[in-house]
Image 1 (cartoon, rainbow, N blue to C red):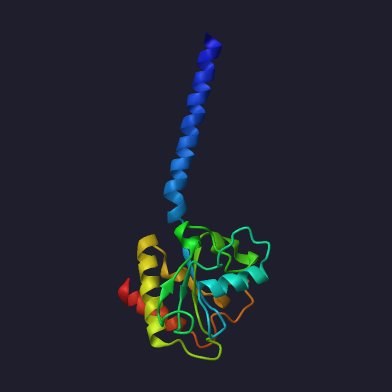
Image 2: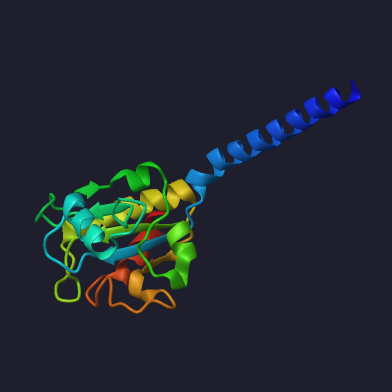
Length: 181
């Protein structure tokens, strides 16, 4: 009889532990976002399908068959100007693949936003910028992300890229966010 009670207690203990961990995951997982990283596509055309194709070519063995970013903002060439889109990576709150392994925490707890365009050569069109500002403001408020945790890809220590380009208005974005948040 005592052996049966111990088995029941163990079952109950492990059930409660497993249930608690599952509940913790349900509450933690979609609320873990602490960073926002801004990217450019470095090309003048793009949409979810195009970025998906590029991702498959560059990272053929990636088990997550999704674009590496959580959001894409169009420039009028492949998507409407300022249109915000996402695929199932954001819908399921999956980690990103938008910075190098030098900054894996920024992939795991960071949202990636990619603007279609090459801001090494061009400036960000105002409607696209305003969509980025609104999306970023919404994410900052929704997830309580500190403004210090918003950066361009190439501005993160350990990253070796020009992304999001020399013409990307990072200072303006942070200034505008300070006014609105």
